[in-house]
Length: 457
Ligand code: PHE
Image 1 (cartoon, rainbow, N blue to C red):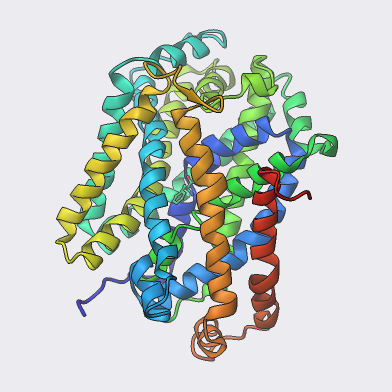
Image 2: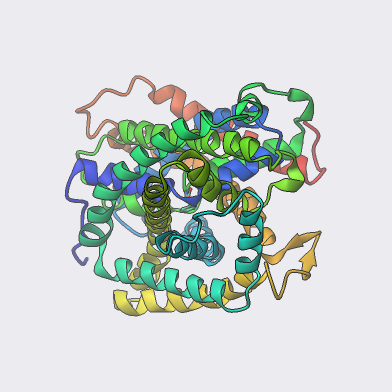
């Protein structure tokens, strides 16, 4: 077997996993889903999904990956040779390819916005100007496609350089910076005049709006935000060393990811309320953060234009980085699978994934402009990709992962992995296995079947 790289340090491992989890899912998608699904009640269901579904499944992915030290499809083959379980790994590879293709569209938008910020283009614009700026850009026939390609190439470049040198080094410096700047923005946003209705929206749950659809969306968002259900964290865990404490890492990643999502909510909604954009579902689309945020910078630091400039530049640059540490992790799932399963040089495997994702991504990029009227079930190409990947592919992947970990994996092996060969305590062992066996798979199944009308919750 060829020698596989490891993350060089514990912190590196946590930050790389957190880097995968924290991304546009937290800052861009979480506020949209919260807005569309009614606010605080959605957030509470989301939190329940993180604890009940997300954490156990994340543990399972870590365990499977670290034990087998393989790409996600091989991992199942090693633990369950000659069985169809390898298809769970393969579903993950497919989902990774799928998500990268549309995720990179929004990631590309962040490049455009970083450039606008660098060129001081937001200065002097009012709350009314930002929606127009966004629509003009996103429906442009060339620009979003160009940025999509640029973003995937950037990802390609890091992935080709390998795990420790590429992924780990980047994550270590940039993740903490992102956290600090987001915290500052929260303070600015909640102290804007008229921010109150945005804050209320986030704090007072209205359960009368909750239906099966809201629950499905909350579950999808939890999987999406934690990068769960597609073997991404399983692949990263294959680079963990034997001393990494899997439970602690799980808890840390979940806390960091959830905090950043909540903070993003506390930036966007108060700011949207202050700008008078409204919080109704019709106002909330994929564009939300690209409209409210530039406005926050102008409003909050309006008296000090240089500060508005510095903040907007830093924010969009860091958003690029947050997106990049996530696209790297999706790309890595596909690349390591192809390189190891088809015996390809890593570089060639990466190139195939890069080209395929660019091709598919172009359709998604154009679905805000040239292909905007092309709809299925009233959803654009972009929305179909997003909905299918996060509400179906990831939870279904997660369901099989939990069945695999709960029912198939040998108990002793399971215990050995989570206790690092008996060196750390795991008093939660029995509860975890119980949850993985009964609670997670049944909950996911019920939520999905409910959506298709095959079961009534
Ligand atoms: N978790 C990432 C985010 O929040 C998105 C992602 C999904 C990454 C699935 C990898 C796998 O942006």
